[in-house]
Length: 306
Picture (spheres, rainbow, N blue to C red):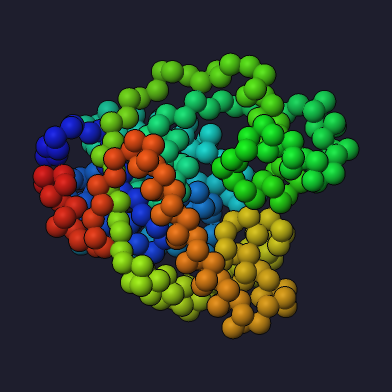
């Protein structure tokens, strides 16, 4: 029984890449007879297993498979987004809660986590053929300027690099400016207990490098090669994350194996720092995060009084 000072209906376990979130969450889920809702923007894609670090074996605890949601739900040709995540999450959350279970959200995609905790007002944006025809005539630099004028701090900076995504981002911002949100206020009330995993910087760096080596030994290069052979263009793979981008460059002969590994390793370390920066920003905006050191499961249990 969870008896925190403020009763919660959602447990959130967050942390940077390679921090061991899933393992701790699965262990807790078994003890609480709970279910896990993933908050990872890449693990939704089928066939992208090694590069996204799905580690499905971690959902098996002492022979028990922990139910999990939002892993392997769409094909890579589909562009899943935070709007869909939020809508799917509310449905999933309500269904699990109706069975008397407190779900456990686990992940490192800060935008997905915030969209739920802060209840972002989001809406489905239709395509505007008139606007698209207008934008197609513009140069990239003009499109970037237009988007930044509408939204100086875009959530996804990759929108600034790809023409198709850039036009869609402008379309969304223009739609939001033109009318009131049609956000459905009939959404579940979320009362979260947010727990963060924090490692010493040197230890986290070691964990990241060790995990990256394991991914290559598990067949990361073959996974990227097979995805491309299945029809996913290199440019599309670039947007699925660092592992797919740099392995793709290696497979195309643009990088040696050593340069690919070293650069990828460095970029993942930098990505972990950006995740931690996002979490600190969440705290500054009023989201209380209870931090535990590393994989200290006893500290996790004390926070929940279980």
